[in-house]
Amino acid sequence: MDQVTLVVVRAVESGATTTKRIIDATGLSRLKVERALSALEKQKLLFRESQGSWALGIPPSTPTVRQCGTCTLCCKVLEVTDLGKPVNTACNHIRTGGGCEIYDKRPRQCRSFSCAWLQGHLDDDWFPEATGIVPHFSLDALNIQVDLDCPDRWREEPYFSKLCELSLNGLKANGPRNYATLVIVGSDKYLLLGRTIVPDPTLFGTAFVPTTRDTFRYWKARSLEHLQRLNDRVMEIQRIHQEFGDCAIPDDDDPHPPYRPALLQLSKELRAAPPVR
Ligand code: SF4
Ligand code: SF4
Image (cartoon, rainbow, N blue to C red; front, side):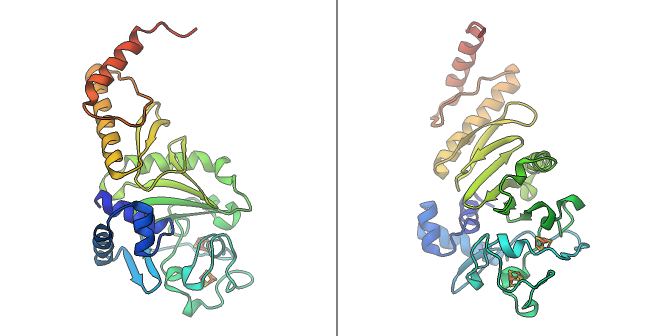
């Protein structure tokens, strides 16, 4: 998936369902947005109807073995636009004791949804009704949708450590299996880079380099062009690190080429600086 399509997917998944709202959110031209939407539709990764566009989640890789049972948490925390149901509001069609009163006629969004626990990606102790967390895969992300009744549950153990592990797996995975881990708590969003929490990630992406095994230094991109420059500098940091075994990580978030001389100079200055006592 190219960067433009990825940005369009993120915009759709963030609630920009009409072409105008996607253009407003991304700053991309109408032509680019239309092309990306058509390509996604052809690949059956998105469907469009009169009310707007909806990205589809990744289907389970193996047949679902679990049952929802008494859980109806996704019917509360997720938006169902076909019903005009906002996020974090219980659907009127939830049946007492679990299930859906209009199961055979439920909207397409409900039919196409299954959480990552139901898909078998997480252990029994991640049962959404008990945790207050609905984990679900979208096209490029593992979304951790948290019930507003327990907004900090994701920061508690054992959940946070597992989320860090899933985040690192997503960053390490290659090609189409690569995913970002995004925590959504009401209107607040956090990107997880291992144990590093990035508040309010942008639609354009985040460039990052590891500082320890599971923590990262990051820079949030303000446009696709900005992301390209940030990523180019990250690649240069990695090249210098490979060559010399070390490279200083700059603080500034607006780099311009050539990156190598500035990075080498900064590394030299830091090596020469007296140790802080
Ligand atoms: S959150 Fe998962 S387990 Fe709970 S009702 Fe939704 S799909 Fe089923
Ligand atoms: S229509 Fe049924 S499946 Fe869809 S959110 Fe409401 S209760 Fe859940």
